[in-house]
Structures are given as C-alpha cells and as structure tokens.
Amino acid sequence: MRASHSSRAHPPGAALTARARVCRTLVCGFALACGSALAGCGGSHENGSTSTSVSNRAISSFSWAAAAAPNSLDLAKDGLVAQDAKIMSLVTEPLVRQTLTAGSSPNLAVEVRQPTPTTLVYDIRPGVDFSDGTPLTAADVAWSLKHVTAPTSATASPLSGTPTVAVTGPRQVTVKFAAYEPSDRVELNGISYIQQASFAKAHAGNLGSPGALPIGTGPYMYRSVTPQGITLVRNPHYWGAKPLVGRLVFPVIPQETSAQLAMRQGSLQAATVGDLRTAKAWQGIGGATLHPVEDLTSNLLAFDTSRPPFDDLHLRLAVAYSFDRTGIAASAFGKRATLLQALIPPSELADVAPSPSALAQFLSGLPAYGLDPARAKAELKQSRYPRGLAVTIPYRTDVGWEPLAVLNLAQNMKPLGVKVTPRAESLNQWGQQLFEHQMKGIQVLPNFGAAAPDPNDVLGALTDPVLQPGHINAANWAPAAMVAARKAMLTSPDPATRWQAVKTILSMSAAQVPYLPLFSAPVVYALAPGYTYTKPLTIFDLINGDWVDALRATARS
Figure 1 (cartoon, rainbow, N blue to C red):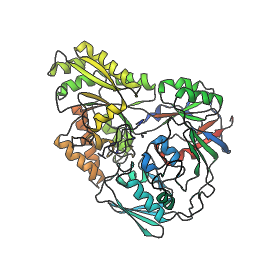
Figure 2: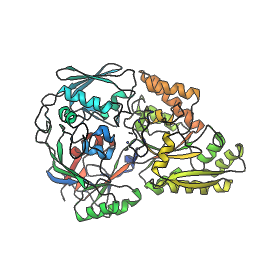
Figure 3: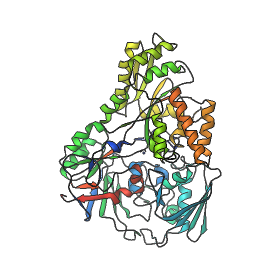
Figure 4: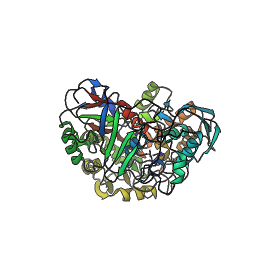
C-alpha cells in the first residue's frame, strides 16, 4: 500500500504503492517466511538436491523469466513493481540501497543527511559516468528526483506530498518536504532511480519505451527490448566492481509450465514460483532450488463495520473463530507462509519498535484468532444473529487461495446456521470496489504490500479516516482514539510517540476486529541447477539490484 502506499488512489490492476499499495501480484511485491526455509549453500533456500560449493567465476549469461513485460522501463511510469524493478535498478540505479530493517547503504549518494525533519541532503558520489561515457551531475540527480516525485508519477503515492528539489552544490542535491512524515526518507530512497536528464527530457513523450530506453549509471545497460524479452549487457563505464554476469536476459514467459520446461531444457536459470503448490514440480528439475524472498505483505479479511450485519462485534468474532488460518496457509503455501499476529508483519514495524524484543513482546500479547468452533458458536449466540444469517463473500479469481478460503469458511460456519455464498470477481471488479469505497460485508484483501519497513504505509491506508472514494479503509473503521493515534504515527518526529501510537492502533484493531489478519507469504524464486545466492534475499535486494551481486555459480555448473 503505500509498494504499492499514502491514501492516494491507483487505478484497478495497477501496482498500488504506499498507503494505497495493494501489490499487482498486485509489490508488489514486500512475511517473515524465510525462517521456514532450509539453510543451504550460501543462503536460505529449499533444495531439490544436495548443494555444492560456491564459485566466484564469471557467468557468461543468466536468464530469468518474466511473467509479463514491464509497462515501461521508466520507473515513474511503471511504478515500483518488484518484478520490473529488479531489471530497472541494474540500469538506473538508486542513490542508496534500502534494507528490510529501515537501514541503507551508500550507492550513488555517498551520504544522506537530514538537517531538519523536512529536509534531505544528498552528497553525490564523484567519478561516476553514465553508460554513454558522460559524467553524472547533480543536475541529473535533481531531475530524476523531480521525475519520480511529480504528482503524475506512478511512484509518487508513497510520499506525504510533492517535495521541492534543488541543486545546492557542485555534487549536492537538497530535497524539502512541506510537512514532516517519518517514512518520507525511506520511501524516497526506494524510488531514487537516477537516469540521464538530457536524454530523458529529449524523449519525454516515449521515455521508457523500446525507442527511448533510459540511460543510467548502473552495472548494466539495455541491449535490446522486444515483446519477447529484455536483454542487458555490462556497462563499460560502471564505477563499481565488474559484475560476474556478463549478460542478463529476461524472456517473457507467462505460463509457469512453460518456464519449467525451459529450465529443464537449460535455457532458463530463474523464474518466479507463481503458485507455491507447484513447488515440488520445480524441485523435480534435478538440482533446482527454491529461494523464498522476505517481503512486506499482509493478507486480510475486512468487515464493513459501518452497517449491518458486520457492525456487530460478536458476529465478526464468530467469523474470526471460524476461519482456519493455519489450514488455509498450509494448503496454499505449504510451510512458507507466516501467520500474522497483527495487521502488518513485524518487518513493517522495524522503523518504530524500540527493539526486536519489545516488538515480539507486544505482538505476543495481542489476541490471537484461529479455528475454534465452540467459541465461534458462543460469539454468534451473543450477536444479533443467534440463529444465523446469509452472507455473500466475493473472491478474486486471480488469487489462487481465495476460493479455497471462502469455501472453507462456508463449511465451518454452516453448522452455526450461517450460509456463506461465494461470488467470483475479477481483479478489475475488486479494484473498482476498493478504490470507489464500495466494499460491503466481508472482503478479502490479498497482497497488501509496503515499500518501506514502516507502518505508515499499509497501516496508514487501512486506517484512513476519510471514508470515501480514493481512500483505503475497507472496514469503514474510524473510532476517535484510533484516528488520533494514526495522526501521531504518521507525523510525530518522536520515536517513542510513534511506537505508542502504533501499539494503540494494533491493540484496538485486535480487540474490535475490523480486519482479521490472516498470513504473510513470501515471493519464491526457483534457481536452475548450478546456481545459488550468497545470502537470503529480501524484496529490497530485488528492487535495489543487490540480487545480482549475491548470485553465484556452483561448482557443478
């Protein structure tokens, strides 16, 4: 929500980012599921065979399947979609490389200072050239930041507003926001993809298309872009260490079975596991490994608390005790999903929690809901519907686990006298209802992902008190105490105040159940025999370009 993120709206089917980011896949890809993965050679993965030793030798070519071609290779037009950003960030690299724990490491910016709460100062690395040999200037950086933060940009929604950007020194750019929002810094760092301003301005109409491919300073540059795929080659003017992989190819292969066949034949080295129930098929490719990538996503149920029947807390609790979170997660994701203790996964609280132990202690103290028929029956008896009722629950046809979850809930509530009728709907139908604020009854909210390890993103969207089109609060839940806490969470410069505000919101939500947290599932990638990663990957390794640095051949390849 913010990764797609702030309470700004996005069109249905888009990669929703910031407080409106409902991953396209929705980016979204950003579930602490890596802990369930088996440790293997050089990183966290699940093996189809025994791992072998890592080699630092050069890799002449590496092919990674893309389920669909990017809408544009200009980030500002495409949005921060992880599957596309993993390509773009290798050409138009970011100023800093963000991490899952709210930290960052220098990249094109050697230092980022925050002299006032609303001011960011970027000191630009000297001696950097674009892939055409021209030098990187502060003017290029300033133009790029203006480009990705413009109100019309697909990457602007994570930010609290449109900042002013100015060159303030030979190698310095200063960004100023009108108001303070704690997450603006990490959100801006995440979209700070830098490209050559003169080329971009000369090709403003078609920038990012095959006829106007952005020029960057990253380790690679575009060689060819066709409907069949994208090819990158090394940038001869790259300022950093020469990457091990000489050529990167991203063929468009929509069908997972076709990608499996290509990997078996040796023409494909990596692919996304779109349906985790097919994991065994991937592992059946002798020596192939599966690599869960830690993400920041929430899967939830939303109850319309503003009108009958789900303005009744006891009815909401009856549903909560009838939903088999554990069974659905195991059936859909095997051991790879993590049950949510709150509306957002722990990693999204990394920016506000005073310590990991304080976070764990707080989350463990929240009410936990799971399948408990006796408690469900008791809650329903206390509701206005002790003899049951009939409800219709929509499910998205493009999300594999949703029909399973709705049917499971229907089966579990039938003995209580509650008749649940499933209704199929498309992504566009679902998105239109969400963004026009027309969701009623019970709704499934899948893949709400954050672009930064900060609660302002998804939590800010789910609790937006403006209950009207363009704002995301599918539960229509806005008690005064929550609204006051939300304001402190979004704007306070004091970490302790923000932490208390987050605890207030999550505690109220856990008690009043406007949303039922379900689970967070990782994005899983398959690697062909002969390849591995030197570390467990996170979503930020994909959107920063770090994944290439972690890629290695093994001795058997």
